[in-house]
Amino acid sequence: MTPQTWANWAGNVTARPAEVVLASSVDDVVAAVGRAGRDGAVVRVAGTGHSFTPLVATDGVLLRVDGLRGVTGVDLDTRRVRVAAGTPLHELNPALQALGLALPNLGDIDRQTISGAIATGTHGTGVRRQGIAAAVRGLTLVLADGSVVRCSAQEEADLFEAARVGLGALGVVVEVELQCVPAFRLHAKEGSAALSTLLPRIQEEADAHDHLDVHWFPHTDRCLVKRNDVVGAGEGPPALPAWRARLDDDLLSNRVFEGLNRVVARRPGLTPTVNRMAARVLGAREFTDDSWKVFCSAREVRFVESEYAVPRHAVEAVLGELRAWFDRTREPVPFPVEVRFTGTDGVWLSTAHERENAYVAVHQYHRMDPRALFAAFEAIVAEHEGRPHWGKVHTLRADPLRELYPRFDDVLAVRDRVDPHRRFTNDHVRDLLGS
Image (tube, rainbow, N blue to C red; front, side, top):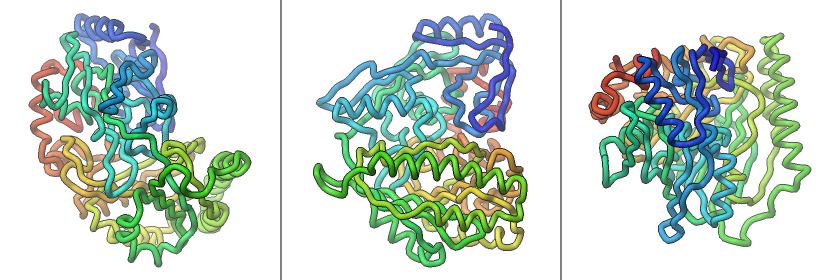
């Protein structure tokens, strides 16, 4: 194909790949990787572009796996499913529901492909839960030499551990095997709270609920708190009526919020007033629904984001320092700061590797300059062993990352073995993992 411009969802990353290949089968992927090898070209794989970092950006071959979709195998006895790599979560979740299954945890956006979600460490929330990559039980990859390799904890174990959150740096994932759980329902309680009241007991709140998600509006003391708990069949209040879901999730959370952000982009001094208004608009609600319908919501207002995982005990200090920075600088930020929690896992490049975490995410409207916010945020989390979300804006490079990830050099050893000529790289990957 002729060169064309690729852009991510937020529009903060663009690239001009020399060739874009649309794969609809594993054979297509093998052929594309083989051709790139003969031509001396690099290959990056694009999902739906929901990363805010230049992980995908390339002037070589951009490989799209959108055509690899759907559930490819099911074992209901073990509750394991095999899924083609290009399957977006918003298609996977109802497909699992039809089988009586669900993923144990999800993030709050479902536009990503399953392979993109695990490659960047998408995590969700819940101190007794883990990120999506922890549910991966097997991967099938096309390696740089064109071979198709299946890996798991039992076969090619080092490749499996490195590739579960692999940044697209080890090969092209073409199929994912997932450990699911029986489909479950969540009782959602959402309402406003004062940050000054919530923060001293945020650890207790995290322990008390299966899933806790906090959205604090800068320049105010108000936050929206989402508490989700697993309930049995027939328990909990009914699902939201269709009109209420449209009002909250379409009109208020997207259309009205877009308008408020446009106002702030033109008149930044109105940010505190607009944030207080936004905090009041998103009122209390309580409902029960299928897990994935509660976890995931539509995000139509475009933004750029930086998110760091810090040790769970550090979240109060991080939020206190961030609040002091807002008070001191009055930096106009109309998007809420999001706070979530997860339990520990053993995935080598997972932000939760051998550590319970609190996740703090700062966002800026895509029409506004995020640099001051992101720089201040990174300076704060650097004092608390912050590990960056791989798909969100950060400036860390290989040396500091090595200090944060105990298995970092093991990942590099796997990379040296399966991609010695660095077929799957770009400038950003070289910054993260070294040359």
